[in-house]
Image (cartoon, rainbow, N blue to C red):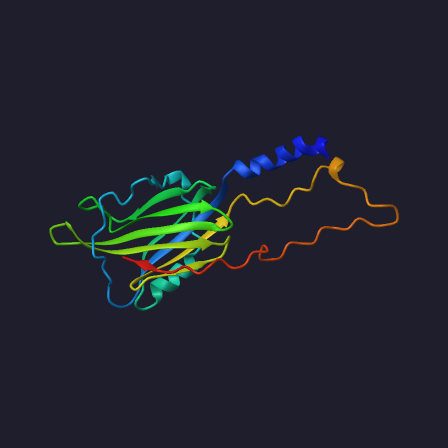
Length: 217
């Protein structure tokens, strides 16, 4: 057994330290009804500690059907629709996103997405939807901040009194399980066929992630 220990460590170590590559896609939209403003406008340092989304990370959107339905439905307005590739590991990564023309040091839509790989992809959404006065100065902001655990390839909906978000993370570098080396496979006793491993459940064997609770400020 001990002679296989270095080989086992070599097989396990890359999976433990390498970040997984995902496609992250989100649609942020305005909902029908009264706009609910935050008690404070967006801070000037809304992107503190975040890295900007690089052009080389952008990917074609895959949720166009959902975006089109929102755009065609009465009372909904798509504010942002972005998709990009992102390495996600045990250390949190914080991405800054924005949409529209900058005024008074702010964008019409600006916010951050913090991602961390645990059992699910733990995600914090922190977005500001800004309104500007006739003088071009920031006049007020809607604020959407929520924590949610995202399951791979499952579309999640985040609610807010006047906003909404659809978000999904999809693995890009998922690989089939590698069988152990031939020298580590034990032979079946004579006269007894070797049993195949049971297939994994279609849903990956996980329970659904916990529902998110809206947190408005």
